[in-house]
Length: 414
Image (cartoon, rainbow, N blue to C red):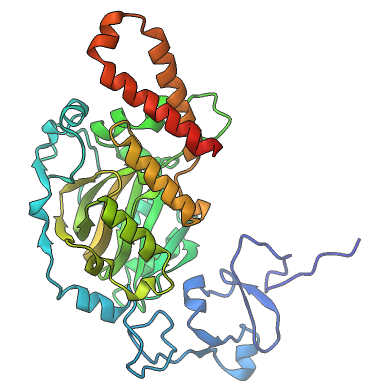
C-alpha cells in the first residue's frame, strides 16, 4: 500500500478537520496553524507565499479593497450595487435609522416575578426585560470577568466558529487566537463569537440559567438518561462581540425561546412580532437570492428597537424575528429552551427550517427526538389520569396535548 502524501512544514498527512492553504509558488499545502495564517485571514490573501517561498519571492500579496459596502470587497465600486448586511457602510446606516421603541412591546418585570407559574397563567408572547435580577435564579461571573478568563476556564485550544461580520461568513479558529484578536486595540476586521456553548467546560460551574428557563425546558425535564442520542447542550452560551458586530434577522433554531444577559457592554436588538404575515414575509426573504441586500425590518409594519445595557436580562419568546447589533465591545451569556407554552409556533418554525433546507449545524439538535420524548411523557400522564374531575376541570389542557401529539405524528411521518 502506498504511503499517504505528506504536507506542510510538519510533514503530516492531509487532515480534513484542519484548515490548510496552498502556496501559489511551490503548490504545497500548509496547515494554517503551522504557518500562522488564520482561516478568516486567508480570504484576504490574493497570492500566498509559504515560509520557504517568501524568502525568495517576498511576502504574500493581499487583495485590494475596492469597496466597503459589499461582502466581496474586491468588487469594483461603480455605485450600482446595493449595500449588504454586516458591512461597515451597512452598520453606519443602521445606526442612523429610526425604529419604533421597544417599550411598546417589552414587558418590564422584576426577576422574582418571572416564574413558570406566571407565564403559564399569562402566556409568554412578548419579550421580557429584567433589570433587577434578584429572584430570577440567574448566576453569573462578576462584571470584571474578561475574555482572558473565558480562555482560562474553557481552554485556549478549543476550536470555535467565528463570524467575519463584514462578509457574514463563518470560519474556525482557536479560542486563544480569538482572545488575542479581541484584546488587540488594532483589529483588522470585525469578528463575532456567538456559538460558544460551554456546558461541558469548567466555566459551566460559574453560570446557572434562570429558574424559569430551567423549569420549563423540555430537554432538562423530559430528556431520558438512557437516550440513544446525546443530550443537546443549548442552555449555556457565551457571546463575545466587538463593537459593530452584527447578526442579521433570524428566528432561533427550532423556534426556541432564548434568554440573554449582558455582563458588560451593550447590545441592540431589532425585534419583529411573529404574526402569520410577518412569518410568511420572513420565509420569502430568507429564501431570496438578494437577502443580504434587503433590510428585513423595511418589509414589515413595525420593527422595534431595544437597547440592552450592562446588567440587563432579556427573554425572547418563540418565533420572534430579531437582528442584533453590538454597539460596544460586549460579553453576554444566553441560552435556548423549548417548552410547553408555544408548541404550535415551535413546530411552525421547525417546519419552516425544513422548507428552507436549513443545514443541521444551525438546527436544534435532535429536535424530533425531544418531540417524541415529550409526547410520550404527556401521553403516559394522560393515560394515568383516570379521575373524572381531571377531565372536567382540565379538558382544554387534555385537548391541547392531544392536538400536540397529533401534530408530532403528522410532522414526523408525513
